[in-house]
Amino acid sequence: MKDYMTIPEAAIKWGVSAQQVRRECEKSRIRGVIRLSRRWFIPADAVLPPELEYAVIKRISA
Image (cartoon, rainbow, N blue to C red; front, side):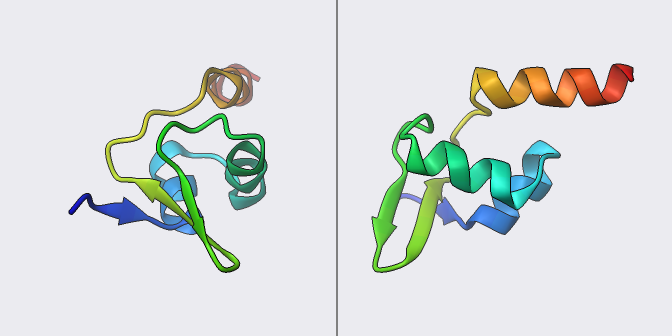
């Protein structure tokens, strides 16, 4: 079985807000994400979507 992380764990790992991760899950921009009931589960080996990568780079350079 694959290892999964929650939205808050992914937000910490990627350095973005939980709301940004949730939005990407809702838009199906994270490969392999699944939703069970009201919770999102993100594969532990998932990569940061390009849209969020830009947000992180922009925040760091500001």
